Length: 327
Image 1 (cartoon, rainbow, N blue to C red):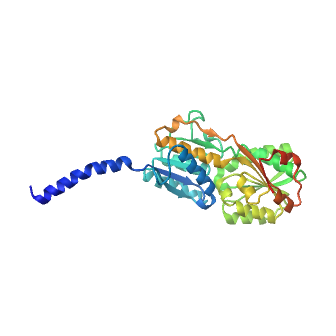
Image 2: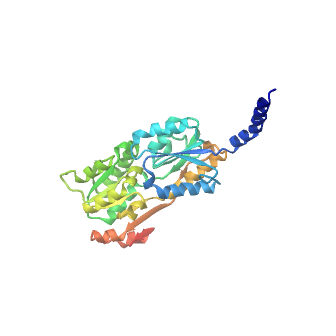
Image 3: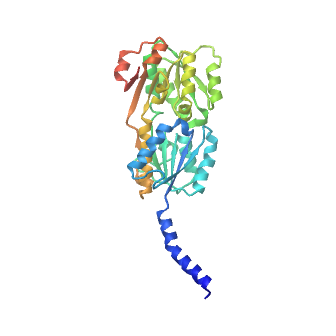
């Protein structure tokens, strides 16, 4: 055997255990799929990472994350989900509502999926049941659709003389929009309110919705839940204030941005739960063994400073029930 061949053989043999060790210690990769943008979800990302840490994982240390953001263009989600599947990620965190979860579910029947949705995941076809998800998916239900009627009632308490309510929903998130409208129509009939439905699925369409002429001008505004509207919260709050519309929203983020009233699930807690479930799956637990978590913490936040801008006196009964009052 030639000396050069011998050295090559010895070098290759020495490299075998190193290569094997590298494969064994390679970090698992999480695919993170979201309907909107990272800049509007900073707090939720921190919560997701806290959940991972609770399970023993830290991004960049013992796990990597591949992020895919649809930037409000829901038609991009199937391609983004397929790309994560092609990269053979260990688990997909599909957050920001049902469009991301359904895109992930359609892209793979085998890679585990942890979703965060605003409505019943059984009805969406994501799981067989809440207690026994079956299949490759589990996750968290934020319950925002079920809370729509309650939010409308709170809006009525805040502005009892307002009888015409504009409802803004996102047609691109059709299942979510339809579910909310069903609940709102029933609640409106009970409360004696007249709903005026407006649809917008882009920033430009939101602007148009607020300037669209109507025969009877609405006196209050109900902004539907969903990740896209949440990402446009500053725009929505600004327009509601400019048009002097008493408004109710689905998340404390709106109230913190100057919105008058918000009522909904503590979404950051839900994102932390998504992170925890992702970590548990990385440790070997199957999605079918993890029951769907339903949010149990709901927050009523009132921005009293905005109320003063409207010349509105918030009823003491609402103040007493609020989880937070922004002065």
